[in-house]
Amino acid sequence: MACDQRGMRGEETAAGEEEMLRRGPWTVEEDVLLANYIAANGEGRWNALARRAGLKRTGKSCRLRWLNYLRPDLRRGGMTAEEQLLVLELHARWGNRWSKIAQHLPGRTDNEIKNYWRTRVQRHAKQLRCDVGSQRFRDLVRGLWIPRLLERIHAANSSGEGDVIAQATAAALPVAADGRCWAVDDVFDLGPGAAAADVELSCTTALSSSSSVSTDGCGVQPLPPPAPMVATAESAHGSVVSSAAMHDTALWQPPQTHGGLMMTQEQQHHQRAESQLLGAETWWSDQTSLHAGLYTDVGFPELEFGGETMWGACADDLWCTDMLGL
DNA sequence: AACCCTCCCAACCGCACGCCA
DNA sequence: TTGGCGTGCGGTTGGGAGGGT
Image (cartoon, rainbow, N blue to C red; front, side, top):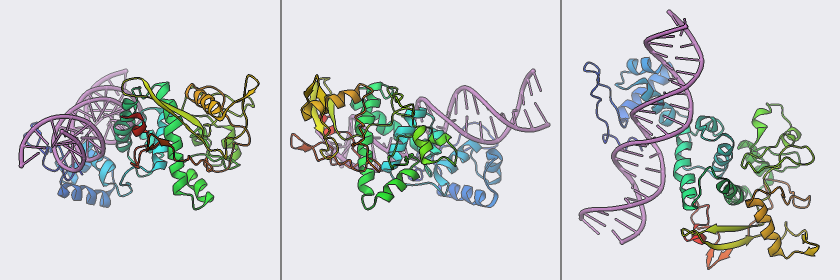
């Protein structure tokens, strides 16, 4: 793309009569010069490298070009669901530590992740009228976006459960001994010999300050299974325009009581959703609902909403923008 | 066709830090 | 200790692409 922009801003700097340094988009010739030089001599010492390679660029510019564009191990194309999931979770954990986040996404640069965050994630937050740093947005990410990503990952790997776990592992999502997959947590700090049991013991949820320490002393609760919840969203005008229950009857049948009375399914859904959105410590994670795999049994029924499906047809639109009327 | 607007992303900027003489 | 240099990081900018009117 940068090459397509060639010449648009490629003016020489005024500074330096004897050595005119170029700025702006890189030309193919410059790319070849830089790539060939690094292939022959390696990278580093960027200022000297720029001079020796015959490039009229600052070392800084050369380094940036190499790391963000020319490096052979770079991945191209849009972020996969796994990568988006990782970005969301790692950002919740580390904030704008783009380079640190990028270390866990092979082939992706900090610049790319930063751009992804600013263009996609912040746009969604803006549409939802909340700040990306707000608890409300974190809850929406946890309750809507991440489950949707997990669903997509599952769908893509539905050919075999082993693949699912392998995928989660490859994506640095810790998988516990029973196959449950946890939110990104301190597994990165466990060291190479950490067993699945250790993973479970160290689980912390990175996504919400509302995460709670479990009573059994096994660390902080993982993400709740995403299936049943009520998505309540505000329209652009600030009024609640809709709420819809997503449920998986195969998973979410345990009867709930409220004041000694059996709760209707709708009441249960509502209570669960409130708990999630308000960061309550009720996780609805009774043993019957804890299941093997990467939330593998989660299969949202296609939710009808005013003739539109809950999730937009656009593969990249993970928010229910149709429903929101945004 | 022309204009406008938004999205996307490569590239730049300023700053901080580490190393070394 | 200090100053210069190289490097890395996060924030910002600006222009192409594409869609809508």
